[in-house]
Length: 237
Ligand SMILES: *[C@@H]1O[C@H](CO)[C@@H](O)[C@H](O)[C@H]1NC(C)=O
Image 1 (tube, protein in one colour):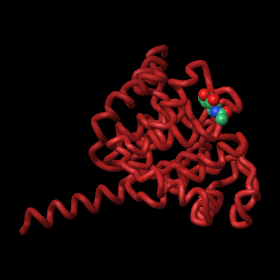
Image 2: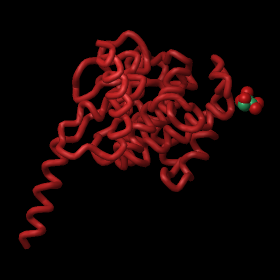
Image 3: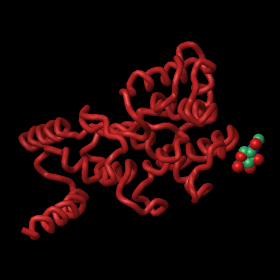
């Protein structure tokens, strides 16, 4: 009995310490695709959103909001919205918005985006040319990704949602959540400032924002790198 209570207290405390990390992006913006997967084998640089999430799952409330630089009012119908990279991007934003609302499992939502972005990076390794992704490729890629074991969504449900009023209502919510910004992608940590472009090393940035007592293992390496550069500057004196 005592043990159960103690564990419940620890769980409650760690929930309060969670770092809220939100990425604002668009389905076909080249920098968005690159940033989401930065730090994976496909994009071996510092950690972007996916690698941060994989490192720090236990201490973050992660969310991706897909509206970005779109303009218009989704409540007036699909034709009333113009996406930065055209109607195929709008379709992607609708599909991802539907995935987020029909499947509350954040791991599945983010795995879907990771699968999609990885497929684009593999298909266009030199960068994502404007107009390269047509409707067929958008739908086929998302459909293939829904069958991944970490995703496990019903594509027909996503399609039905994205083609109707539900999808537009979810897209309106994404629009409403998007703060003023100067470009995409950008991040907001713990409802703080809009950071555009997002941090080069999002794992380190989130580790710094975490106020819990025990930092996750992945923070040790991420913060050590920063500490070393700080130390090397000080040693000049
Ligand atoms: C869509 O894009 C794919 C991949 O680039 C291409 O193979 C296909 O022919 C295109 N389909 C249409 C209808 O344009």
